[in-house]
Length: 279
Length: 230
Image 1: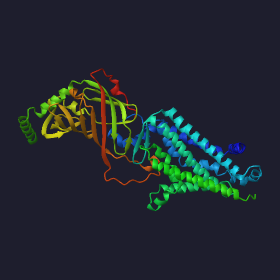
Image 2: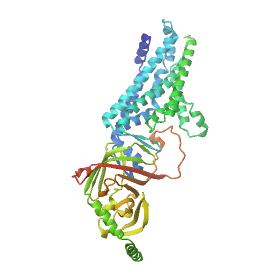
Image 3: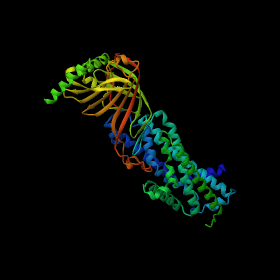
Image 4: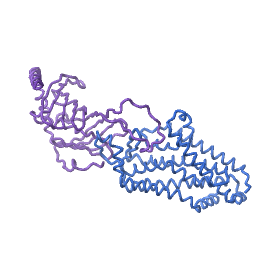
């Protein structure tokens, strides 16, 4: 099994597209950090100007924790697409190249092959998040320093003391991993259904964009279906930065995401096991 | 002119009714606090500001006569722009204001004289209303209106430092605009729409708890001139 996982990781590592996510994350994060370094105070003064009419604000809003939070918020749409770029290709890429025939003739069951691909996909997702964490949080703290985190919402400011932020960020990355696993399992399912690598990637992107739009629209007709869309629950990491924590909402969202992962993965096993390999 | 005559009649009447004239009372209160040239103290601030959720903040507070006031905290804190000692600083000269008695009220079980203060000289202070404990010579409650920062309500709670007119607790109420930003700016894309409130303003309350007063010890001027982070 370890050999299979290692082989899958080597396959991922040898594909140039696997590095697009890392390059994009680094570029976006560095761009945001540069922008915040150059004009962060001005950006924040626009946000706090209503409060500054009445209060003197003691302390510094602009710090590594805030920059990391802004980055996480900005990348929430892009990260799933970067994951799908790799995980959507895991089966369909082999089908398109014709290498799947060679793979299934080796002395491993189809379940083992798929399990190795899922684990390799998860390792890729984890590494991408770790990369994001290093660039967003570690670099953010090094450049801007530590301080109280100001969570900027459209109708509120939540200020979290600096000593209370690290565990929230670590848990947020954990929740983000579960969110991205939903995307990777969904794209893997699509990958099992098709014989070309572009289809699952594009379809995953389209579904995420569609679901996000439905989630954003404040239209009553969509209110009842929003809770069934996995994109609604993928942003639950944000609730870790509320005070007090809405644990019920968090457990519900995490539960729904785990159910999605189980459902997509189970369907992938069934489809992959029954798949006729004709090419 | 008519107003001034009316004011002097009111003043004469009030002084006849009670022992101390409103002016004398204010001056006595001021002279009691006047013994404090400066102080530093530990402060714990609890915030209840519309649209802002934050935990209590600890810091240090510095005051220097006549009206230098600065709170320094390790983290983010919201301090009212209006200095809570501004009114006192403006009332140090008895010729600079007119005090008018506006009745008596019981504040936290203490019979207080309500004194309205109108400054004679052009300045930031527009109007002050003070609920004064005539026995303790302490301002238990005040409402101060300034040109630059509007109206602010203060409640002072005294205990062990009452002899120096230094409160152990101060509650400041202030009118604030409710926090609102476009969702596109905050990337708050999936937040649920809340029921719209009728008013776009609310009352912000800041509770300041003072402890470990260090009175009339040397305070470095730099404390007041250091630039704020924001």
